[in-house]
Length: 257
Ligand code: NDP
Image (tube, rainbow, N blue to C red):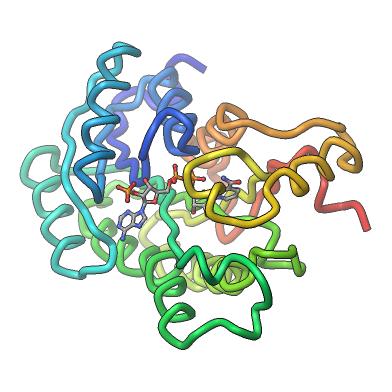
């Protein structure tokens, strides 16, 4: 797998620390020879990322700030990438957010603001990012986002984020249709529960992980590296015939009734 992405410029959005799914993806894409560009929101994430890159001897082609809540920030980030890197061949969207209060108790209690916030950051952001990235993807390429089973079934506590992930997965289909004619594919990886900063905000994480060990066909949880390799598949030519797809990387848990 050492040269699957040789010469490809890939933007990775969403490394907050070494537990981030996007960091597992970084390792897989780096090992496949990709040139990596990163976007961060918080200064704290930028500091963590630069340390991680140094420690793991991964060099970034560029690191830019990007808050997906703002069209201006997204446009500025991709303009800077265009100026410094030129053509890009892929984007990893590994970004989501909901208020902690909306990730426990009953979905029924979700506020209007909380609902819209989750949709904006976790689903609409893929639409806005795809639009900005498309201008730089003149040689075609691949966009990959991260989703979760809570979009398909009621998972206790996932609540407003489950509805946002359903919206994200529908967006994957509609975007795949729009950009397919330009040689760009859009897919999602649906990972099982992985202990990350964001996962801490969802109530009942331990129970969710325990159920996978007990009931999933493989009887074990997945990790960031497994999601990284599945994302590598979507980024590479190996998946050239696939778009608009959601691939479960969850030890097979989603097939169990
Ligand atoms: P992390 O907390 O490590 O990553 C979440 C990232 O989202 C952070 O880097 C954060 O950036 C970024 N983010 C949040 N709000 C914004 C914003 N307004 N603009 C730009 N970036 C923003 O958690 P994960 O790695 O778990 O999450 C990555 C993705 O994987 C999410 O979509 C999540 O829903 C999904 N996923 C996670 C699973 C899990 O069990 N962990 C399972 C299945 C899917 P910053 O820190 O700079 O604010």
